[in-house]
Each structure stands twice: as structure tokens, then as C-alpha cells.
Image 1 (cartoon, rainbow, N blue to C red):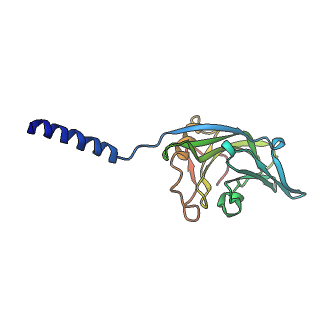
Image 2 (cartoon, one colour):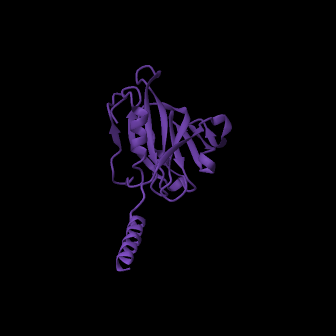
Image 3 (cartoon, rainbow, N blue to C red):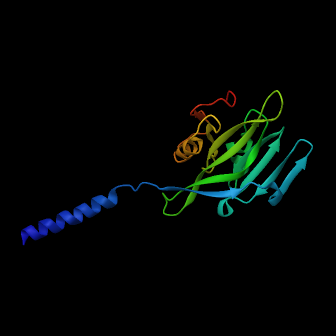
Length: 189
């Protein structure tokens, strides 16, 4: 009988030990369109415009254009987010899709980052020259660009962007430097 109790105790302890270990988060992607014709114009004048657009399952997305450069801001307090005014140095415009990286670390799929394709202009001609994947972490009060990947210089650019997005959450927008991943020839960030 004492052997049976010892075996049962070992099984119970093993079960508790298994429960105590943290589960690894899984990641997935969802996509939304960036179609300004489907967005609500918030403000527009000769110097730029801003739109409220549909994001992932109602997650707020604001698109802003000024000085021929676009930026994206996320969440319910966009005025307090560092990402609100972040853009790329060259004149640019956005690609038609936005990739939302989702994590189930909290037991349900929640957006933790986005990947946006920016088309950048040649400084001399103004014509589209480069494509940069911009990874933005989504953390209330700390949403900002965390990585740039040159989509034309890296054949695995989408994979590199997803790997960067899956590390989102620990980046300090006020202190950390945006990472350029892989080969980068689009411009000097």
C-alpha cells in the first residue's frame, strides 16, 4: 500500500509541476485592409489628413498623412502613443494590407504587433524605390516602431518581420533604438 501511495504522490506532484510551468505563447496572423476610401476622415487640410480606419476586430487604427509621409497609430488613446507621429524619413505611402500579429498568451487571441509595408520614394525622382516592413508593438502607452526590414533586400523579409513582431512587448519606446533587421539598403534609418 505504501508503494501505491508513493506512486500516486509522485503522479500528483508531477501534475502540479507541469501546471506550474509557464505555457509558451503561440502566434498567428490576421489581416485588415488599409483602404482610405473605407475610413472616416477625421481632419483634412492642405498640409495633411487623418483617418479612423477599421482595425482587427474593432481595434482602433488611425492613419495620418503629413508632408507626403504616412504614420499609423493604434488603440483608444492615440494621442498618448509614441507611434502616432512615427514615420519613415523618405516620402512614403502605405501598402494595401496590414498584418496583425496575434498572441494567445492570455488565453485568447489578442493583437500584440502589426507589420505594415511602406513604399518609399527615391529622393531624386520622387518615384517609388523601396519597400520597408515596419513592425510596431501594441502596448497601451508604449506603442511604437520596434523594427525595420528592407522588403526588397531580404528574400525572407516577411519571416524576419514576424519574428520581430513576436518579441513585442518588452521594447521601451522612450529608450530603446529601433532595430534594422537583415540587409538594409532602402535609406539610412
